[in-house]
Image 1 (spheres, rainbow, N blue to C red):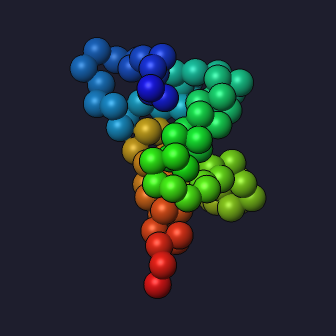
Image 2 (image 1 turned 90 degrees about the horizontal axis):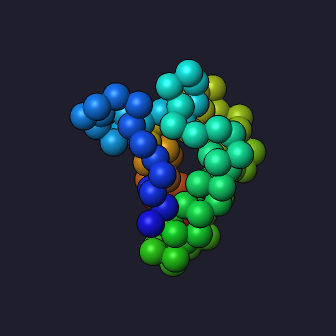
Amino acid sequence: MVSEGLVPTRPNQPAEEIAFLGKSAVCDSVNLVAYLVALEEQVGSEFKVPVALMDDKAMSLSKSPFRTVATLADFITSLLQEKQPS
């Protein structure tokens, strides 16, 4: 499972508050990239659409989608909605 190894920094911390960036991050930048690559593969496989999490769109946002589990989930949801047939 992709989320293995993401350990909350506080006891009883809700999963969606787990930070990927900043002083309370649960991983370093190399592990974050590895996590995002694995997540791209899992999302693509589950939803049968290719998903690029680390593209120009993600990098150009004023607030990084990689701040927390919740912001990443919101970003993935928006990507999947964009891929829905109109």
